Amino acid sequence: MLKEPTRRQRMLFIGLESVGKTTLFSAITDQRAGEAANVKGSTIFAAEREIKSLPGWQAIDTPGIREDGSVSKRALKKEIEKADEVVAVLRGTHFSEELNAVLELIPPEARRVCFIVTFQDKMTDAMRRKLSEQVAKHSLPVLLVDTRTVTDDKKERIIAFLRKEAEFHPLKRRRMKQIELESVAVQQSVFHRPVAGPVVSAALLCLLFMAPIVLAYHTSEWVQQSADKWAVVRSKMRSGACRHGWARHWRGTMACYPLAFTRLFGRFLSFCLCL
Image (cartoon, rainbow, N blue to C red; front, side):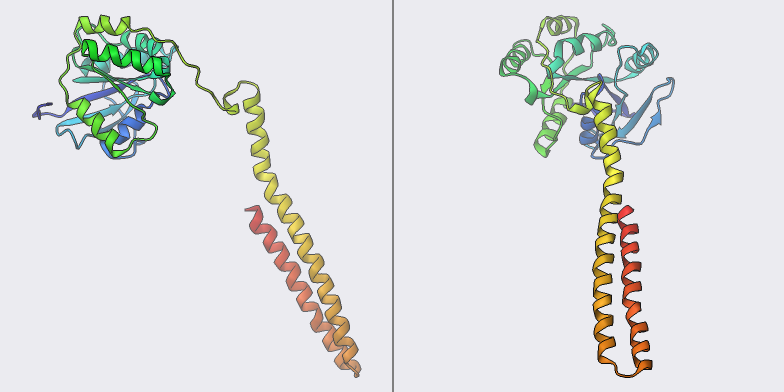
């Protein structure tokens, strides 16, 4: 069990981009991540929250690691050295390559390090079985979980895992490197394709603005035509029923008001649809 320290200790979440760090961060802190605070002594920005389920600890959600981000890597190394515990988040579909990228940043003398493997549902049965066997055999500080939808049961599992005082000594570091899993290509949507993505995005954006305008134009035109026919018929009926000239003129004038009202309503409807 984690001891309740007199000072608030730092639990640093690291990992590549889009691995689920922010989802984990939000789950264990019971709040939405989004408020950014400048971490002292570095140039990176991270969100800091208190972990209510672990008194005396605060979670720090760091930006995703990029392969070309040499400056951010140096700053992240400094934060890792100051952290009391490091939680490395890895995708199970790219376990081996992301593990090597993360271990490059974690110094060999670091002892409080654990790993949370996400995208469990995207891994093959053979990958999950192999990883689970190695974790159980060598008592590795690894937790497999699907963080895209964090339920209360999953949250309890994550908190219980973080409470353990598993040391990441050099032998376990070597055991982790010996686990070799093939990468699984995650199916991406058309928006992620280099050529079709921008074209489809631009087309949908144009459609988003054009569709209400076209709909408003045809709707107002139909309303105006129907109103014109109704006004003409109504005017003829009233004019034929009147015997006196002044009454015929008065009723014909009154028949124009519904026509003007319907046209105004059609334009108002067009304006609302454009919004």
